[in-house]
Amino acid sequence: MKDINVLIRRYRDDIVICGRGIQVLGIWEILKIMILVFWDHSVDNILFDEVTDENEIIIFKTVVYITIILFCLFFSFWFIYIGQRAIKYGKGNSNKKYFLVVTAFCAVVIALGIPQYFTGEVRDISDTEFISVIVDITLTILMIQLIYSTIKVGSLEKKIRQV
Image (cartoon, rainbow, N blue to C red; front, side, top):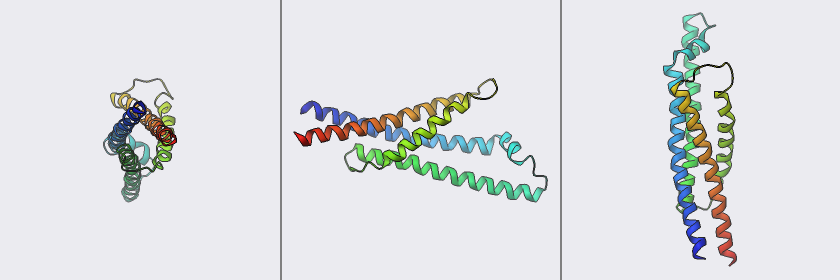
């Protein structure tokens, strides 16, 4: 019984650490998108090449930038939600596990996005791209660890109740 309580405490600590890590790395993901869009002018060239009228460019840029900001806010909400729910669950303040569905979805989406860094023409990888690959892999591993630890806590607590 004592060993099970130690394991539960260890897995709950893992859940809290993963929750905090997901929040931090999730914010980095959002910052990465913002930096790419607002400071990398190659994105402007791709998006606005075919628009010739100056008024159309301003309107089109405004719509695109507002859409990107809303997209970033939406995804930052998910990362913060996952992290907050994981921290609450890990500290024992909540028994709800609905955040695992969102976590699994985000992990799959991020994991499916990792190969895009390696497809296409052979070229030198920039420092930002290299860091982004590492962050995406780390974020996916954190999410998988969060799901695993949460499932283990549930099964161990179920074992205690049966005894």
